Length: 243
Image 1 (cartoon, rainbow, N blue to C red):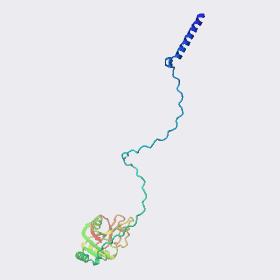
Image 2: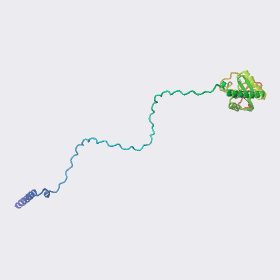
Image 3: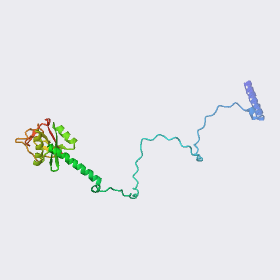
Image 4: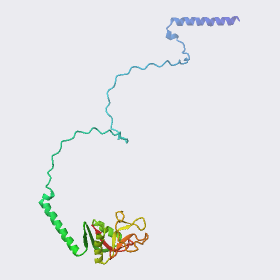
C-alpha cells in the first residue's frame, strides 16, 4: 500500500516538472499531438445578391437561320394613293364609213359573197328565207354526224319554225330526193319533241299518225313531200344546215 502511494506521487511530480518546462520553452516545441477533428457545423444563411456589374459590349451578329414555315399575319391594305394625272388622248382613226380603203374592202367582200351565193342558189344547194340560209353538202350521215358537221361550219341542223322555212328545206330535200334530219329530238317525255337548244317545238308538220315511236325513235326526219316522221337517230339522212 505504501509502495503504490509512492509510485503515484512520483508520477504526478514528474508530470508537474514536465509541464513547467513546456511553459518555459516555445509553444512549437511543446505542442501536443493533434486531436480528432470535430463534427462540422451547420451552414450559415445564404448571402444577398451582389450589385449588377457593368454592361458588356454587344457581340457580333450570328449567322442567319433558315426561313420559318409559318408566315406572319397579312397586314391590312394601306390607304389608296392619289389619282394620277389623266393621260393624253389617243389618235383615233376615222369612222368606217369615212375610211375609203376599208369601205372598198367591205364592198369587195360583199360582192364576192353575193356571187358565191348566187352560184349555189342556181345549183339549188342553198335557200334564203328572210334572215336564214339553208345549205347542204349533199352527204348522207347519221344525226350525230350531221350535227357535228353543221356546228363545225358555224351553223346547226336545219330547223323549220314556220311553213316558209319548212318549204325552203323541202326544196333541197326534193332536189336530192333524200330524206333529211331536222334539228329537233324527243324530250324526256315520250311523244313530246324539243329543239336542239332544249326549247319546246312551236311548229310541226307531222305525217298522219306520227310520231308513233313511243320513245324508241328519238330523231325527226323530213320526207320528200315535206311531212315529218319520228325516226331512229342512227339512220343515214341528207345533211342540211342552217345559218
